[in-house]
Image (cartoon, rainbow over all chains, first blue to last red; front, side, top):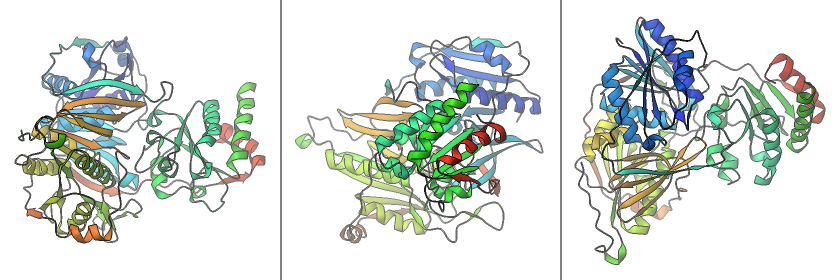
Length: 326
Length: 267
């Protein structure tokens, strides 16, 4: 555990991801407990003024590596840069956001460093001076408290669980890392966006989800409208993804995304265990379902028993009025 | 680095590539299982579990079988697990794999890096073009083994793929990421981890299940390493307060908005 905390601050385009700022905040807290410095590693192309921003979230030192070939995540390039940074910093702990990038990269680092990795942690800290992480298993039906035998300790942090928090800004020092492109047999050719405006479910604050009760793909329009009023995105249950109504990237649940938004509105979703485990950690759950016996009413904070095709448009309309008045 | 067995398109008979495909498959409790904490408080109670092929590996297996059907070649299933994994292996053979290697251990550490090292040890002496994994096990949710094995073997690895095509000694994969996908091209041999729906799994007929029992299975003993990840306690997540129904139909909407604003303070 000796040695600084090193946080991988993932970016998307020129911006840091929200999940990166969450990890930097969590890293600051851990660094304070350990009385060590917090280093942040940023990799990308054309990153904006991230130094000032990272300083606000408590980072002491920034290592940044930029190159035109680093705009999209290339596992072998990023791995080489991360291993180089790790040799320099000799961290005791490494934190990464549990995004597609973080979850791809972290195991590669762990096996090279001959240490252990705790995936998708929802809590990290010290117990008797030892690093302990809590992570869900069996899709969240249980929580495992784990320790890592080996050094550095590596953990990926589930997005939207740790809160990003600005503190008194620090005078952050910046060091640029040179990138020498390693030999690789892999080329990341292009990035295809689903919908440029749509935020990933794991990072969304509000999710309006539809299930089998939506009856067909054309009916998701009313959910899109509700999501728009609430500033959220649309999700789906496995039933509706398996029916081909929605893409897999919209799926919430055991074989889809695990989400913890501030507000989750479940429409025409029964709330089977495989769905429940993916969204039960939402701060507030609203359920709209015709069937009063649907399991979702057993754990939704606010339920309306009724037809989604009547209730959802009414809710959208009245929310528009509500926001209009304020 | 494993030997590459990838003849050029010209030299392959009838343009078939004869791909050597290995799919790592293991058994996991069905996703509908209830999970109880064992009396030692440090593991889960497996007594009532019904086991299935790990769903993500079922997608990987189907993708492997489809590649074989298209390009020719063979599919080998590689399984690390207890004797009871035999059922899972038979199922995989019925679903189109040609042979299996079972790294059999009743007490293998529950640790992704240990699994990765044992699988890599076996794969070092195995010829393959395509190595497929599920992106994670639906039991431990670690999502580590595929990348670790690939790193140990020094082969490229594309994770969370939703599409895979092979041509001209190369593979093109579509990797699912937040808000979209990345198109990644790689030379072979290479490893891939399957996202849900990489390929829609087929059903095995009774005849295929019977025939599967005759396919060759090599049993070996895996070598285990000290664990790097240790579970010190298992807990249930904090319960949510019981649900509340605000009312029925459209009439309940104003009350819902009021509660979301004044009580929950989320709008």
